[in-house]
Image (cartoon, rainbow, N blue to C red):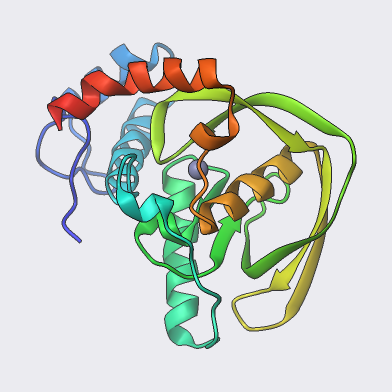
Length: 214
Ligand code: ZN
């Protein structure tokens, strides 16, 4: 898949590790406001832009598709998981579903807790709390907007890891929200379908100018 940089003002050259130039540093400092380690942050921002360029963006039709279950736990699957974990980290995300990288398989990666990344293959919610909570959610495939989404406050999610071993997570709060968001992606459901009609209208209005440019 060809890389596309979403930010047109960014210099065309890819600043790899240790190669970010002064222009990049200045641009990032300006946008981000406060940058502690300018060189590192410029690199991280460049990585983030590259990662986002590889993540399918609304209204890409693949984001509406239902992903079929994984049947083979092979090297191909493990390569996909490794690539998704890398992309998720580079994009500063907390979850990423295979459909978001254009692969129709029931796989997602997420952070069940801080500094931890796990893959769930063929995930299913085994149990969910009666209690639900509404909070703002963003999506790496719908950049620049957030919208209120109601989710169960706790869930038990079961599936397999990338080696085919059975795994289960009892999740609460943010982690439970992330897992429900990612599972939705595997069914082609976006936060736009889960929010209020008003928030949906607002989000679409905010997205529209960018869609015209595309
Ligand atoms: Zn998402």
